[in-house]
Length: 471
Image (cartoon, rainbow, N blue to C red; front, top):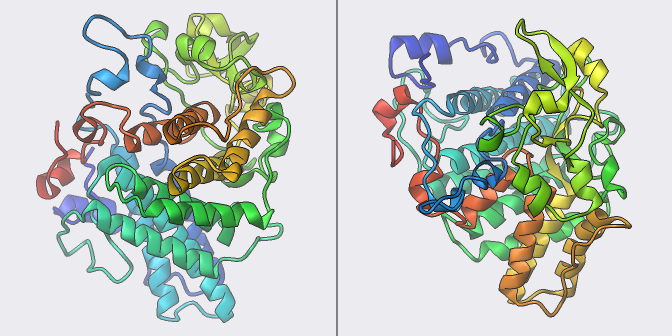
């Protein structure tokens, strides 16, 4: 399969740019609000595929692999095949193509029958989705082609890779614009970003810019300010009981700021996890026993997010049919991810329909709290009362009535507090859209982080764009 997204040959033009499945023609489309929103739905669908980061949602994959020369993922390179991540790359640029088409139509006043505020909301959604795609691309691939609505047509023009700083600059501009034009809420229309979601994601972008690879510490203050605005809005709260966070009934509750929406007619795909070496490598839902049983604090959150002892799971048989079988037989005694699986989704129901009706969170309020805690600590040079309170909200919820994880305190050093925030992120966001992997990269928790943490540029495009180091 050729992975090219740009016009490097007749095949790449016709197959991937002129008529990709999720990209409708601009000649006869984007004339009405409904058509523009259909384009945004297509863009969000592709963004979902692009954000499926199956490499290390946690560093659990290698925790059990230790010998005299290696000590987990932090001490040896991750070697990926040159075709790894092709789906992420292709889906992201298809999504960006859709958003750019909508933006061109909006900017040229081609979309009729809409008010100025409605047009601004369409533009805000498109810019949010584009920013989300580039945020994933720049973290996965580093320098990437930067294509905007007014850029030369990629079908007839050759692109080069924009530097990481330039890509982040565009991400920031798009999210700033989105925060100005998007509404506070969408009433009864789920699945659309709001101004608060844009601000929350932008706070995370600024936090990333403050750390590796850019290391621009001035962005800590920007991250803290935006996260604090979201907190002070009082529009979001943590779901009180950690056991309820990933229940079907909670997928649109106050903590779930934004998610890939799953409905009965458009269900989400199965949750994907990385199994450890002792459980047979990559396998849906399985994980490393060391992380689940020994690293994770003994608290209700562990039991809510990780299932050490569950009665059954669904698994495809030799003919591809989903059946209900004992979990020990399915994963050779390895624990499995609970967030998107049993007990939150009825296993028998899944076995019948072979779908997961779960939303996949893009941004949770817990994330904003921990972004604020990390950034405010850096800005002040020590833990502040508000930063301590923010992380402790997450820890207290995780502990419930029986957990034993220690709380953060005002007397901790700046480094000890930051280490606790990063560890808290590991436990809270394990197996959520690569959150742990991205934290490991930006905090340089891997050796040789530049050459071993970037995905390879798809082989066909690399012939023109150049390849990342190590491939």
